[in-house]
Length: 125
Image (cartoon, rainbow, N blue to C red; front, side, top):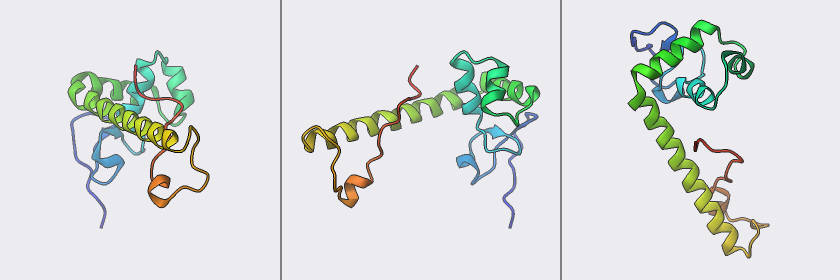
């Protein structure tokens, strides 16, 4: 059975349970509004955003940004969730490295393998 898209009143923006965690995304893609906003906040022009997501049209980019400006609390909460995830991952990884004499374990336990390595970038701005 197909999952129904939730109509939210924005052209080019959709929310579908089970797709991108039900978060706002560019319709017919898995590109979240958050992703477009992240690049925009980082100073990317429309052209740079299209380099990152070549399937997006200028209208889709601007619709995602319009959605953000009308729903800032929702998208900013996503930024907060990601910042928390990255901070926790970095803290857990640092603790693991310290416990192993300053190096990642050479033969990690299943619990140690479950600790994500921190990314070389984070959403902190």
